Image (cartoon, rainbow over all chains, first blue to last red; front, side, top):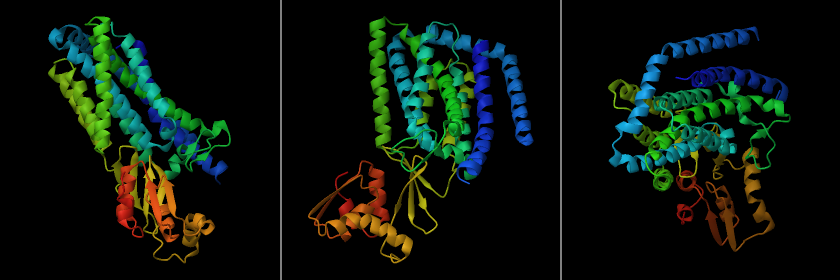
Length: 36
Length: 379
């Protein structure tokens, strides 16, 4: 497996683990600031 | 906030561990990739190359259409970004095709990556509470025809949506690179014109197959089962590779059909995914592509309640202006609330036009205040 492919797969997996956290924080922000 | 920072650090640690693990598997993965490339260039009998080009092209188009349909059915914003699904598939296929002369093929990565994406999106949609995902139900741009989805007032309020889109784009493109490469490998075994002719034939077959499975209202598990079976047919004939691939295929199908929202019945009409359930008042509620679409109003009971009366008057407004109309055409009749209003308005003849046969069926079975003969018209 090439270095670039390995990095891209790692990036995709790490980003997708992080996505629920980002979405959760953004949702809290949206509820507090946009639809209080 | 400190808790979130700790979780982010934890995720970074997991990413580093995962990268390290991939590096440790490098030798085995590289051997499997070399074996896969050899199988596609030499192992596949010359007699079957034409068929292989047709099947690989059909697979790439069919899988692409299946992804576009499925992604748009999970989160409402994907219904507004269908081109993004298309572009991510194209990016992967194009990049893969250009790598068709390499001596390594990572075809075995497609199934785990698709499996991971199914898990990721299904969990985000159904595993998180509505409060936690509310920011994904707001459009990050201003759209005139947004079907009732709120729009953000500033670009930066929609950054989380762009982030999720970027993640899905990357996961999809990466999963499609080996599929594009597969097409490139087999096409190179024929002259350009012959190879392209077979490829075109396969592409048409893939689109036609999606048309057929959609016409029969089949579930995503059927679409992806067909795609996965075709994909596995191109795997190098090594037992361990085939077993791991089949394992990921089964896992992906289980995730797709997991009963994540049992209160709502899922229907995949030829046009879209519908979710049918009951609201707090017991009325039939329909969601299209994960977003509220329509309620089936029965005004025969409790129509004197203020809230229901207002809705009833809204539907009956045209017949307050024109009483006893002779001919009424309802374009986009949905489940028939407008048709019922026209009949209450003493219309002599009503033509209901609805593109989606599933919605027509729901109207015929779910609305008690419309004669079913009205909805039994031509679809």
